[in-house]
Image (cartoon, rainbow, N blue to C red; front, side, top):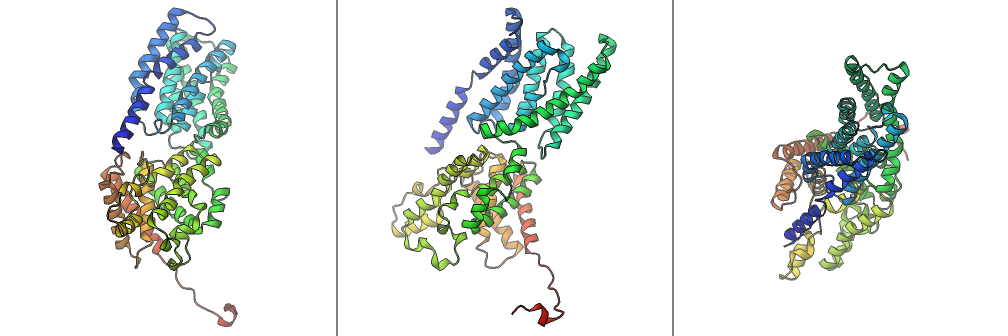
Length: 461
């Protein structure tokens, strides 16, 4: 029943955006014709953009794990695309073709959403601009530099890569103009060629300048922004290490497992590491009720509590985490990861305790609200979280015992249907298993014992 309700909600959400392409196509067409309105040109451009939208972009939207996570991703995509179209028209009318900053909007979309959407935005802007001015050579000039620059921004890890993308796009811009020179005879001056080269580079600098403001305003963060959040100096992580040191250590180990696994299967390692560091931030409010923060198991407060009370306290770390993430304006990716890392799993320990007290206990009362993990990154986070917590119960630390825990965890999650929406393949799960085991094996390695030279000097009394 719960699955049917969730599916119905997703269908309704999809249907509510079914006609977005019509609105966006119309607005971009109007933006292109704002200075020299021609109804025929407007109609032709509208049809052209509509074909691109429903032929390409709609396919990406329906198959993307990113843009469907939250409505603000869609709105950000639409607003950036429309802003880019308006800016291009204004700059062309005021300064000419050489100054059109066609890269800004596609680069922002690639950094904040996904490469496919950035390239699609570049295709729309390049083709609609060329179509409006009846000059297909403009498309041959714009789109190659857009495509190359956006391709270079896939899985970006630092700001210098944005500048490199702009620099390479500048070279591509020059090359495309030089290829057209024998046919079109531009008669450009040295200054014109310099502008054609510097335009993409300055566009890259503009993207770097705009990016932090967009991230803070929308809470949709690029990999660059996520790296700045994933610092041990962040006030929330400092507070977590002080008030819930066990949870802090757990989060750091989960982050290590998840990051390396994501790298090895080609997922977004920066995203999963950042989410792992903050996934249990809600435990900061009641740290003494979580076993990893207890000094001894004999002092476990749940020993004297009813299972339904314990369940409510434990589950509250999800809602508390979401509330804290919103209060501190953490990236929306972290807020969405907090409920996904438990998915819709049953809280087995307290459910079993409740069953011992009363046989007529509904397991739904001890089930997390979800949703289930919606991407490879969130699937890895769930596996890493369970594995790290379970490994603490190992009586004897051994690689074989740990491997059994990882394999058992993955089998259980598959049987429970928690990994259904993650698109993790059998090959991915094997790589994740091997990665976790390798990391654990490295943790078990001991350093040699240093010899004592002078016991009297080296002993502190």
